[in-house]
Amino acid sequence: MAIHFVCEDAGFCGWRVVVFVRGKKFQKTFNARCYFDGVDPELWRRYQRLRAYYYKAKWDARAAALNYIDFLSDDSQQTKPYRGVGFQGITLGIGQYQQSRGWHCYFVVNDSRDPRRIPITAKRGLTDSWISAVELWGRRFDIRPKDVQEKKNQVPSRGQFKLLWKQMNAEGKSIPAEALYHVFRENQDENAYLSEIAQAS
Image (tube, rainbow, N blue to C red):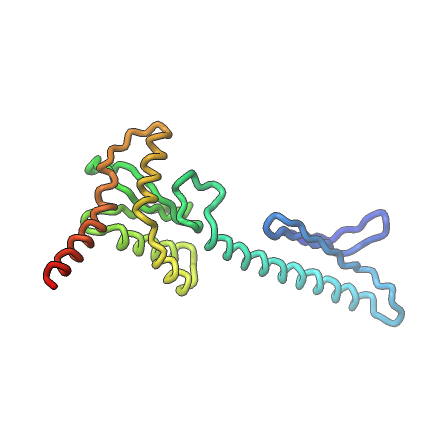
């Protein structure tokens, strides 16, 4: 987005504002030359300059609002297959950790300054790991609290990690099925708990 003062051979002399919103170009010009009788030329020039900067500010604000909406409603175009969670800033992953060399599923908070992995472990299951990732995502990207709370309730399914596991192996990885253990363990624990309740009643 830019604002420039230009004078062209055709006679136009003034401010040209160019903005892009969702890839669409918007352009408007504000003539610095006054053609009205009784109007102070300098006052007109200042007025047109103010209008140009107001127009730019209005479209900057609109673009920022739409970018925020897009950030919360769709995966980034750079997101690889089966890694997306339906919005930008968090992706799914499966990998090994240097200390244990064990395989883990994890969430990645994709802050370019300091990307962070949130692994799913025996102590922190799928839901708790997701909540931790979303809370960190909210702080890193300055997300509104109500939007953070909404995303906390959108826990990715265990099936998404299974599809990612298949995809990564199709890409040439050799990830054992045990990588999915902690993802599915939470569901097994829940089922066991519900079974105990059913038996007790």
